[in-house]
Image (cartoon, rainbow, N blue to C red; front, side, top):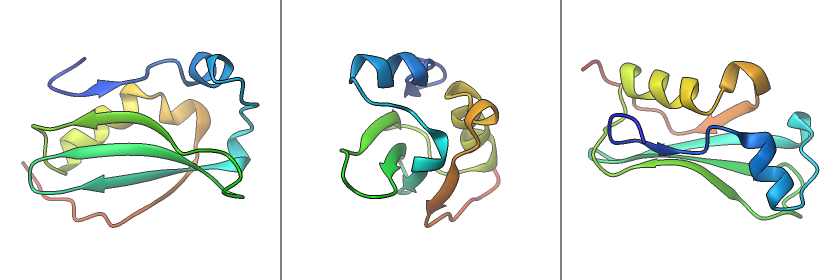
Amino acid sequence: MERGLVASTDIDDLMQTLNINHNTLDWRLFLDSSHLSLKAVLLHNGNTLPSIPVSHSVHNKESYENVKILMETINYDKFKWQICGDLKVRQN
């Protein structure tokens, strides 16, 4: 947990625990938020595997800084999943 954000920091280990082969091209990162919460979920491109929640915060709104923290925490630079969602990013 960092700054009110609960996140999986080792996605490879998470996938291995779930017995799922993690090919980053088969997954996309869905970001969703409201004015008080921010969450990230991995969605399988073929929808044959379950969605995997990787981050959630009930106290952080969608902002550049909070999305940056989320992306760093889940090691987005390592995986570079395609991002989807309805981003309404605001400055803090």
